[in-house]
Length: 84
Image (cartoon, rainbow, N blue to C red):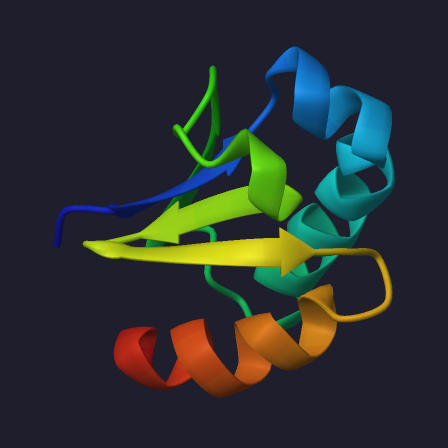
């Protein structure tokens, strides 16, 4: 089975907004839910919605206003059900 890509914006705006606090949480959840063979976490430069906070993309859905406080909820409610 081919891995699905989960993109996390690593552009300068997202960098300033704290993407490096979100990144380890995502990596940890991928490991915790045993998804290493199913999901490839990839850094992306600018997902075109800089004014909407940290941005993440899975399949064709773009998630905005990602933060260290809401990443677990976004991941478990909106991404995990589509993978498992």
